Length: 276
Image (tube, rainbow, N blue to C red; front, side, top):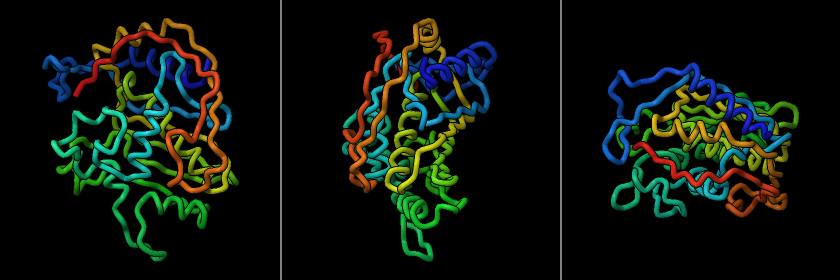
């Protein structure tokens, strides 16, 4: 069993056994048919992934890693807020007629700020400090900008990354205010594991631990049967993740800059309904 499977199983079993339903409250999300999308949740789940030991991708079901990385690079590398620049269509439901999601996600990372060393956006500031000031305890990003929330099509879910260099090892913390465990959990875990690998490589560091802090970890009502089917399935061994070692510039990485060897997974064929 992979470490990612083990953590996911523990999280979901804990939520289903000890979580709290919100069926007694009015909720914002809706299903396609207009019905309210209720959840069972746990408050504050903290997961730790040793990236040097194993890449944290699920085998209980397939995670489409190239698509996840494509979205990651759209946000962190292109710093875009236009879905027309993204290969996948996962953001289309939040975009306006021009493809914009407003001042959200990549837009926030691309805003330049003034520092003594010059003007840099949040991503370039992280890259600068990892190379020139690795002892800093201020290497972080935050895209939950209260001044711009009213102009965002969707408030950021995964909103903050903290990077910490210990010895020659890069560790990271992903803070997430809300997590749809079935549709998005491993998608986000894989994305920010890849980002930590990339930042370590371009900074001449070894990859270390990624910590994922989820404030509201929930399973939607219509996802429960799918989750139960996943938990009853047989997990497989984790695949081998390899990053193209020749790439030293963060802005040169692509969705094809990595390989997954021997990725085996369970294929349920279940279409996952998404609450909006």
